[in-house]
Image (cartoon, one colour):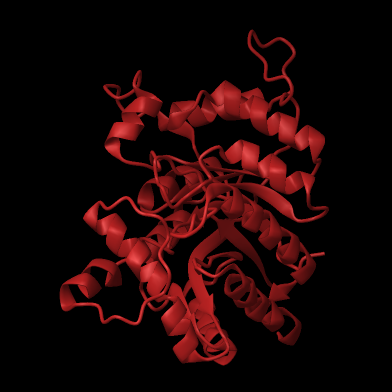
Length: 333
């Protein structure tokens, strides 16, 4: 059974980071190891994010990886955070998640995003027949949802998938998905771990415009944040330099594996590149006491129904310890 902090379930967002001196197989095995620990510690969900053509991220075949995690855990919910729907045929996604839900009943979540999750050249490779078309995301989402309806008269059915109750979430980093999920009465997860500047406005729009649906009578918000926790504030700040380097590389268009922490000083120019994406409200760095205090501030300012944590830490044992420190707050809350 999952545990809570101030009544709020905590979950994990995983990218299967590939370390500078590591390999993809180790990254995937570490993801499973983290999921198994997370289940023991009382985390609610374990979501995997779709990214492509990134040397430091191994979660490109997201549905396959979800199956790997679900097969080797027992209770924790496993899902996508998210599947970038325009990269795929809605029917194929319905079949994949229908298969997952059939194999691991009542444990699968389908989080849906709109961005490509990659660079433009790779987006073309994924979406070449769609690149000249106008935005068809709402239509693709409607098609995907239709495949989960129990409609034997439908010309095309998702088998497996048809008639299965798989929770669908919309994910976003702006107000677009906030408006769409509100109009459809779906739960909404905001990516404030990399787009904190739009957090408050997106939540305000979603809650104000929410229209109740058969499954969701009230708005339901999950806030995605970074947490780098360690025994001391200084150690946590040191570990967080890996995350800062990751955002520097993204901003500069550098394709690189995940870097070890560094003691070098960042220039003012470098700080400007990552500070915008790493707001102190949604990138929490520090000891258990510091994390506790900052979580209280986040909850006070955003009133989330759930929180999902991304913890990009180079050393796997220290990453496990970071999630364990947060889990220790569950029992103390």
